[in-house]
Image (cartoon, rainbow, N blue to C red; front, side):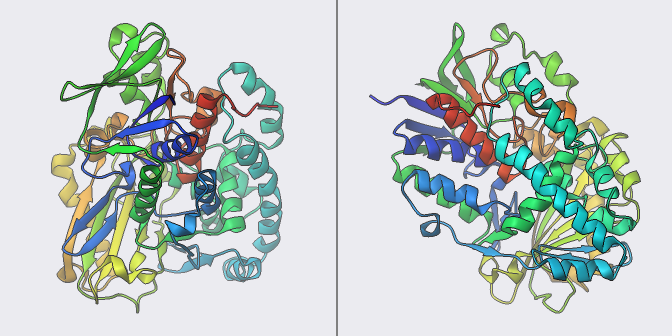
Length: 497
């Protein structure tokens, strides 16, 4: 009889691991406390609009292809990806914008409009990102760092690649214009990091985008969730919704299964937690069994910022605006704002925004003649002490008035569907420690071996996938963690040279 795998949570890390292991012949069951799968990629539906709750930037479509190929299937039969052009439109505080895509000459022409002397600097920067990508992604992203000696093996290469520099500092070696520095260093924010603190290894995101493009899944990110769920069920896996896990059961140095909130017990040979690592240890494992990974160790870690996200639909189109599918609107302050968010834990009066406008690419996710959006503002996690039960509405009003005044004329009188989430949602609905949106912050001292490991130090058959473990947040990161979990369970884990 094949071995039984239980997966707690249905985020992309859990879905990827479940699909991979089901394809290998394991009995797979997933348990999700909410009424829909997806985790952070939950889909909100309101008044005929579909709003993707989570990741909307698809940068590594080949990673999804790999999952389907491992099952003898074709990704195209489940999910359709289309490229986004440009990748992003990035606005400065005066409304002037910069576009970039995979066309090098186009990007250079855009740079020329800001600072012609930075064209060569950009080419020099680009030439270094391939080596960073090769080491940081190809060689290390799907390799488990289970021993400190694993870290020692890669330390010389990390030093050679100047991983001790921050992304912003690294970009600034090549780019002199302040706005262009922001345009080429914002990527850590997509995975919960401060560009002024995050290791320069994350400069590889720019290479990843240039090499494979930025894509959108027709039907929204929820279509990817559905495609993976369909694959898992086609392979014989089971997905249980509205089934909250109460405890991971322990027998000696192993886990033996789970108990649900309704008291029912489900046994397993291996358990994979797609729940946040601190939540798993604090609330799903009886305190008497916890040893090394105590609350004290997890408390000492630095956690990512949180998010305030407003999902809204209008009864008119805004195709005559300057907006594209992916828009980044940078405020006048950059370093100071990020310091407030990450260090001072202060909700500032100003903000920088990511504005997602998917109906430009896919009108089907909104009623005919309507436009769908979400706008995201990074905010501190709950250590800020902000009472979001009273702060949320004024903060929402501030953002929406800004959009109306600068980008979307008469916005608020045209809104016919709206929903927003804040740090309390990340803590209470997504079980994220401190209400952080991306779990453990991607600092050099919290990367690889220094990050919560993919296999528990305390239980030999408990594994972690998702943003809180190695290699980190973002779709490429969490899908890599699912590959690591598969390899650890099957005994085929990648060795670190």
